[in-house]
Image (cartoon, rainbow, N blue to C red; front, side):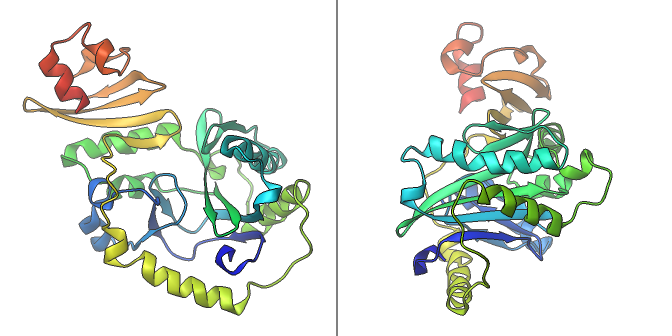
Length: 291
């Protein structure tokens, strides 16, 4: 849409499950490509930033395509402005939500929406999702890990830091209800002009871009990103370790080691920073923990 000069709000729900990697993600470092193939989960590289996400039905996506004149110049200010309608949407659904810079919206300290943006042609594109339901077990299977026994750490970290509407609301929540509220709330912030179908030329361009963004050349491009940790949500990461024959994982929250899997319990509570760790542990161990 942005490439063709169209602006507006698109709300959609995936019909199938697939993995979406960020614009700068290095697929071979972060995704188990063979596992995705065996699970019949296709992979696409999107044109916006952010990390790897698992898309499926029961996720509602909002896609804003805006003239740059309608968006604050600073990216953080744009996120603050455009997150407000989403937070109000959660409020109307009965949940207290808060914005966690730069990409996330949280409910009770857990991520319930992830957002990303990009400058495409003359537009600022802002995308995000509302999780009605989410399969953390399946998500944990798509990551590339140095050892299969470490996958339990990813699953537990996702369970403890990601949430969705069905965890909090017992009544039926539909795509139609969420899209209606999103439209209403975004309309309070932005000057939309009615409704229309997605133009045929935009659908044709989307098909062309899909072929490009799912091609091996695009997916396996070496972006240079090392992926030393797996991002769970803003401020929360999992670091997998193979050190002197011992394997384990660390949950790092706001720079502090909050949880440990494997024989590294003595690291609990330490700041995950090489210089700080060197005050308490040998250089050999610290190099192993932080490489």
